[in-house]
Image 1 (cartoon, helix red, strand yellow):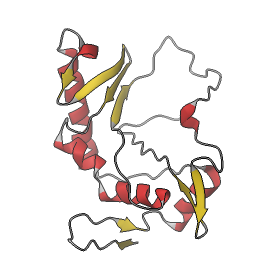
Image 2 (cartoon, rainbow, N blue to C red):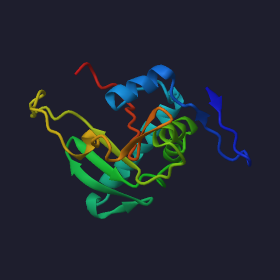
Image 3 (spheres, helix red, strand yellow):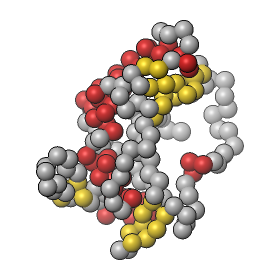
Image 4 (cartoon, rainbow, N blue to C red):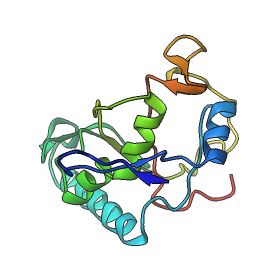
Amino acid sequence: MQTQINSDNAFQRPFPALTPAQRYHLDVYGYVVIEKTLTESQVGELLEALQKLKRDFLATPEPTQTVVRGCRVSALRPQHIHFAHVLETDPAVLGYLAHPRLVGMAEELVGGPVRLEESEAIINARDPQLDPKPPARYGFHTGTRPHYGTYTQNGLYHCNFVKTLTNLTELGPD
């Protein structure tokens, strides 16, 4: 893996950002799981920043009607809080969103420069009242169809829509 040299040295990211095995998995299945991309320290800082954001929202009279550090809550349930526009909430969050390896992976998948379209975070816990094995539901975030939002160039599959999802805590076997 080489580091892409930027003429002003302002923002360097690796290219290719994916190993051949990771790229193959992405090409075959449409996704790839990459463990330990962030350090334990980065994970801890990010987790604490999001927990602080949650506390700050829950301390307000109307969390879904409040803006905290440029962020708003778009869904609030006992086991679920969804934050929209987390970019400005904490330096750890900004560091994650601008992480050179994550940006490099997005650029590799898109096939060129990328821009941040949205920044969201979810703090979620399993609702003990819900069926742990519900029937599968498929919606917008299951991907796009071939030739719609995707293309192949120089033998590589590219996507116009890329999401970086990071689990900050263990998910468990299910």
